[in-house]
Length: 320
Image (tube, rainbow, N blue to C red; front, side, top):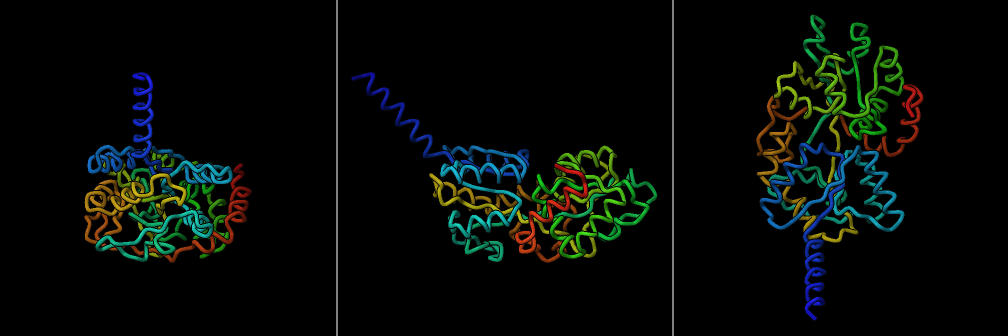
């Protein structure tokens, strides 16, 4: 009887632990996600957050396989690919959450609150001022075609990076895919991810990068000779939504985590990490005083042309 009682206690303990655990699938940088999770756990003692982190493409591939097997493990999804969230919403695989946070722009509660922006990041131009030397800094996207920047420019791989996929779609819609052909002829190189590219930019292997802004600001704080430039023809707002799977085993805890990301504490931490908070009253990151000029979203175009764009890009740059 004693053994049965102890075994029952162990089983009950495991069940309670599972009830207090949520699983996050994300492409966000772990060095930024982990401090946010610790902040959440301090405000919510006893709740555990498990994380699977990889590039956007790999996260989506894993979750898609789990959904096809009718065994999704994620409670929350947080990646840089709005088109996948649209797909999930259309299949009723996302749980709607009502927007109630004071100061939250309801335009960032997509599809009736099925997924949210919780902070904003942009693709812009980053330069290594030491590597550029006496060359003028580029001020527009088309400046990158100038011969003086030949073999100096890099960008991440859109097969791996959701932010780079936004760049691929936006440029192709605005300028035509021929813009990439011109960039390639001017020596554009492709790295796997934003973190790899930003490190090579800081080391001087590149002089210019088409890249997300927040990671560059972190390297600037560490003393790297870098600078973020928002092009005068508009930066690219990279959708990086978070949503709750309708199959979540702990939807109430998942919603608590999502709402926490909109809290003053979380928004302030986002700013410290170099992101632009989605709540206007929150502090701004260093170097960003007001609203960032951005181009219209290319999400519809990307959703309609995704595979064609990736095939063209892969052929042009001999990828895959």
